[in-house]
Image 1 (cartoon, rainbow, N blue to C red):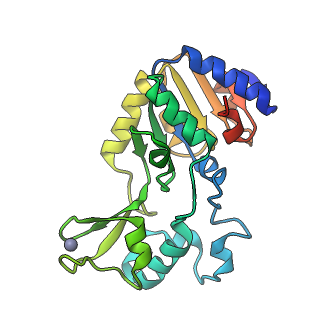
Image 2: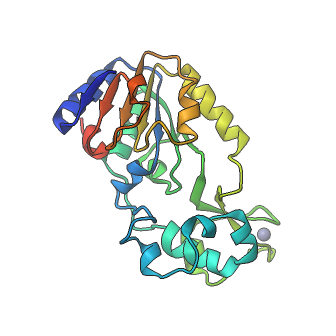
Amino acid sequence: MGEYLTNPADAQAAMKKVMEKAHHAVFFGGAGVSTASGIPDFRSPNGLYNQRGYKYPPEEMLSHSFYMTHREEFFDFYRHVMCVPSAKPNQCHRKLAELEQEGKLDCVITQNIDGLHQAAGSRHVIELHGSTHRNICQKCGAVYSEEWILDTEGVPKCPKCGGDVKPDVVLYEESLKEENLIGAVKAIQKADVLIIGGTSLVVYPAAGLVDYFQGDTLVVCNLEAGPRDSAADLICACDIAKTFDF
Ligand code: ZN
């Protein structure tokens, strides 16, 4: 087991040291990166999901079969819970964009769908679960923004051809895009530093992807300890936005 740090100042210093030596770092991020930007976990008791009193559990409402059979309710949930137009990048997003520009970080792989890495200036982002910022006409392929979806009501239809507009978000029962998985594996295989942030090493696909890492330094930035932390050289168990404030 590597160094285990809970003090933000220590975590900052340790992360700074790791990144000074990095040439091909990869950041793999989960929900914790977004919650630091005020994007609520929809499962939380105070979250919008609970406030709006939906009749179905969130996992069901985010499934492919629910999209096929309850489209009106699906889009109500999507507009009110999944799209968070007020969210802004935090220091973790900003620092990662900066490290990419400096040539230290190759790419960000994220499970989040909020587009905040791109908003912060990151260019090479692999969005494993898609993005609410792309909504695609299933008939003609036209792409619509999150703002466009938020301005529509009921079941959105493509203004160009009348086709169904489906969020470019991987729903439950749907598989991850192969090109994204291949891209993630390639980046991790080439990485000298792998940082797992805002997710534990137990959750799929983080758990499986870590096995492709052959580099020197594995860092975990997560508030809660995970059973596979023993594989990490450095564990920063504090607010991720503070850890990246160097
Ligand atoms: Zn269309």
